[in-house]
Amino acid sequence: MNLANHPILIVLLCFGAYLAGSVLFAIPVCRAWHLPDPRAQGSGNPGATNVYRAGGWQPALATLILDALKGWLPVWLAYQADMSILVQAMVALCAVTGHMIPIFFRFKGGKGVATALGAGLALAPSSTLIMSAVWLAIMWRWRISALASLVAIGSGPVISALLEPETLPLFGLLALLIVVRHRNNLIRLAQGRETGL
Image (tube, rainbow, N blue to C red; front, side, top):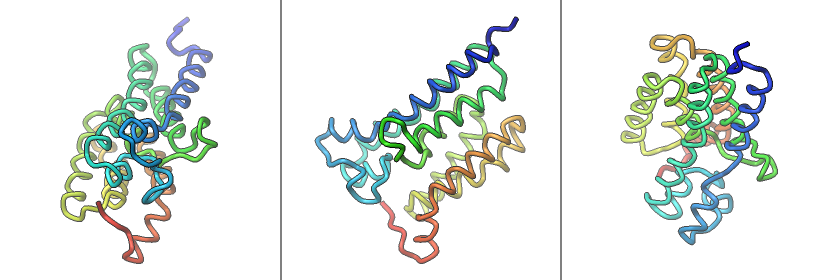
């Protein structure tokens, strides 16, 4: 029997990924930098962009790295355990879902972009790096994080289909989840009210 793909181990790893995703690092980072709770400031989103608005690039970078790491680590563990691409994708989705609906914060979380970045780097690095370049290009031109995130994640299914087609279902689901989480941003973008950094 291949223990790497044993159902119990898969369930445990997926649950562990969800719990890891449920840790919203923006909150302890803001406490460490003596900043206001990000959920009560700006957009109310516990993510790196909102932390940047409150405290600058250092706490924002710490938030980004930690939120990405909690997506990367479970997928990397699944890869190291020689689990299938399908299982790795399930683990990635569990980590991102944990960030969006965290059990530790009454199921009110963030938008999952940084966690998806980390999971993507572990599972599909080529596609994820190109998506990151898309994010940087949009951010450099318009300075609106929500727009950059939506364009980057929206390009994910196309990029993955071309470079790493076995990960297309994952990027398709991630795109759907993250676009839904950005629905208020989409409304503000359509109305010209979305703020930049």
